[in-house]
Amino acid sequence: DRLRHNIIIYNSTMNACASATRWKVALCLLESCQRAELSPTVVSCGSAISACEKGGEWQLASFVFHSSREVAVFPNTITYDAYISSGEKAGQWQLGIHLLHSMCRDKVERIDVSFNAAISACEKAGRWHFAVQTLGCMSCAVVAPDFITFDSSISACEKGEQWG
Image 1 (tube, rainbow, N blue to C red):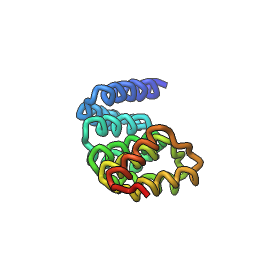
Image 2 (cartoon, rainbow, N blue to C red):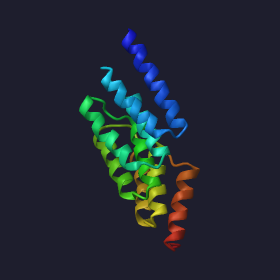
Image 3 (cartoon, rainbow, N blue to C red):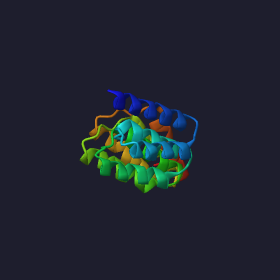
Image 4 (cartoon, one colour):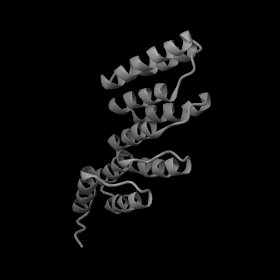
């Protein structure tokens, strides 16, 4: 029971680090958690990925995402979304598309935020075709688009001068 409380404290602290864009501290806490023989949880890894995403460190977010499986922590929607967003901010539009497919393969629920980050990444990279294609995939995934979805999709078409 004491170990469970300790991991909750670590997770809460890492989550605060993510909110404060303190990615270095979050990664140190994740590492010290493992050294203290506490098993990281999906919340631990998700908080570290989110901190890296907010700090513009998409490669470190990628490292945490992929290494989490080595400690038997499997990503959930929040973890995937933070990783997709880290790629979006770094101009890695292909990453978002790839991760949406991985979410489907891994049977992880995709939500509007998942698609919006991928569409926004395509829009920022001038890849209007992929933005529109991803918008179309939302209906197959039974995910309702929202204002952000349409705004990013329209902006992608505008940047690609696709008006027809």
